[in-house]
Image (cartoon, rainbow, N blue to C red; front, side):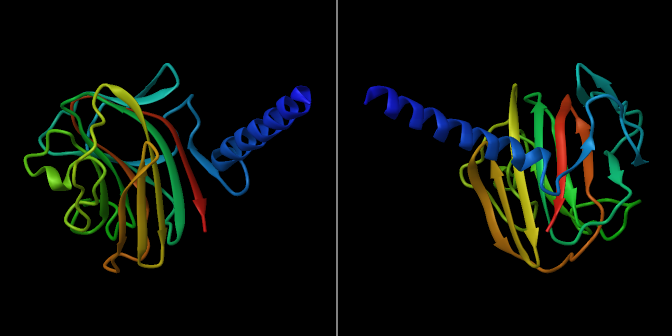
Length: 197
């Protein structure tokens, strides 16, 4: 009898593991970073993006402001899965539905923030800047984290490390490319996958 329960428990565990793995690698998911090359992005700004140990890394910028890797494809309804590591002083984020792919800001995109030291913490890490605040703000610094970002029509959710930080309806930006931002500190993206919905 114990063997039967053990076998059932093992099958359940394997099933959940398969679902979790499939959630980022199959069923319509597209890897936008392969862990080997910077990839095919439009570049805005002059951060020193490079690949180290299977992660997309930036830690310097030549001029004042921020820099972005901008997807060449636009997305309307989608899910994003990303794994990232940020230093305590990092200013980064994932911008979605950008209206202008050359002049990127939280005014013409939705900015899912990675910024533990933001002066106004309600729009820090895990928030959508100027749209959906977080309270309390989760901390990303010094560890690997996950973002699960979903946008379907005006409804957007952000889940960071398994905890929902944003659940909001907002219709200012309907479609556009996504970007990976570098502002300061050290940012690393280990996996970035998109699934059109």
